[in-house]
Length: 273
Ligand SMILES: [Zn+2]
Image (tube, rainbow, N blue to C red; front, side, top):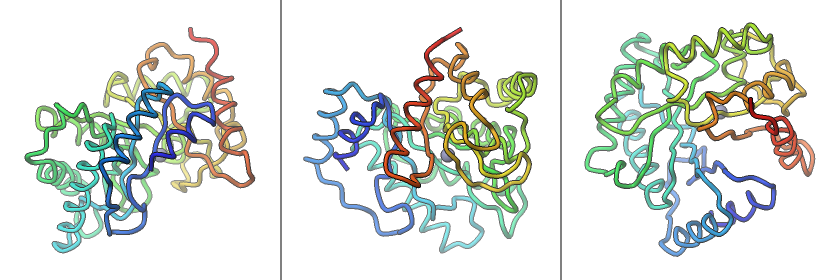
């Protein structure tokens, strides 16, 4: 856990995202006080902020199966507790799958489950905000449109600190045009009108292996996929997004790929207009 801060710094990052438990297991990781203290010390030392935690992939707060929902709520509460213990600023959550219900009911239930799971935990005092991430929108998955993200945010405003995380790969394969200059302008205007650009606290900067509108969530190295370099340059140099953290979730196919993607993003970010 605490090694992640050291590794982030060595890769040339000034922000980073981690899992606080195994991403594909229910059993929660037992986080010790010394680990949290060491994480905080290293983050202060290297000036790494914000710290973003991604929730595990099993959690589905929109589940229509009572047992699965109960497990998901408990697991998500554990995620929030660990995020607070680690002094993380953001906890990223996928809004879930509405299989067995309809989309609207799924969105309502996800919002209700977030409220239930965080009851009695002081996120405001802990300076922790939950971020709802947009998705590729395949089949039953919630969050394939900005409107769906905005709806979850609207339902939780005043209940728990809530904002959004937008993934470039998910946005592209969900069907939004971020590749052409005019498309990016329109997509950002649409994002602003629904979620609000100021509410997007984290951008996941992933290129895509699949085509726009394909709903296939396969991340690619920045600049080497169907999005290409230019859209990332536009995002990284847009002053309206300067408050946000930019995180790569790109594959590691060969040693050094993580560092190469960080270098590419930093190169593209050099000029702010
Ligand atoms: Zn992502």
